[in-house]
Image 1 (cartoon, rainbow, N blue to C red):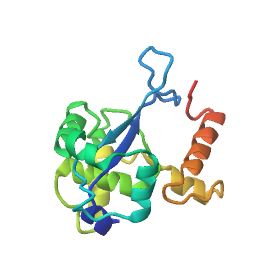
Image 2: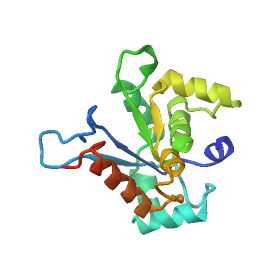
Image 3: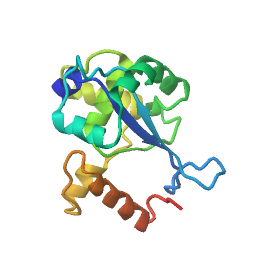
Length: 177
């Protein structure tokens, strides 16, 4: 994971917010909100990438040239992440639980953006940095569902992601209504 995150540039990050009962943010509208951030850091003509990931992004209509011009600079994103108080859950001042699908890769890229530096050399340093910024309230859905035998999820499997969301909605762990 460290070498992949170190060698690659972030292309996209999805983020949603919910309350303790799984209700997604609606800002008093009939819609729930999930944000999809496309970054300008990645240059398809210069940077390393995995062909299957690029294929997935292209099927999702990601325009890499447009992102280079109009995408978000990761430094600006990091500043906003700091400014909005989403960090330093380690002091117990906030009751934030982080739920991720692609486990350590998601947090690896976010840590790389926040610190604007390579990931720590050792796993224990990485875990310490994670706890410092995000506390220990982190759940990895992909790993959890695989352990429970509920899904066989491959990277980029959008159908499997939909299954996860439907499962969470069915059991009242997240509310799309």
